[in-house]
Image 1 (cartoon, rainbow, N blue to C red):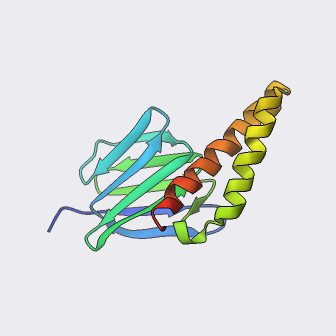
Image 2 (cartoon, rainbow, N blue to C red):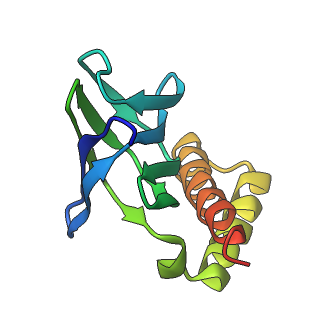
Length: 135
């Protein structure tokens, strides 16, 4: 049996995940970060992307939005704006959001609109990437 640690993922709406895991890979501000039991203590920002959770039973992936992660040698707590399992994602809605964002980005509107739609595009692409594994 591999070494495990306790992982909690919390959003404003719910406790997304709680349990013992072997590894978690998440999109950190400095790039993808893999965390194993015994990791050095740290706090860092989480960005929009895919999170992979490896448990003794198998591996699952989900999308995660901006937030923070506290890493301790025997536990990890992630506070995120949102987190979704692939089966919770409405693919048609994600495709529509991606297309809307692409259109606004092509129009070269204000900087604020550009940044807002760039974030919406990243969220839609992360959702679509995770749902491809279901198909």
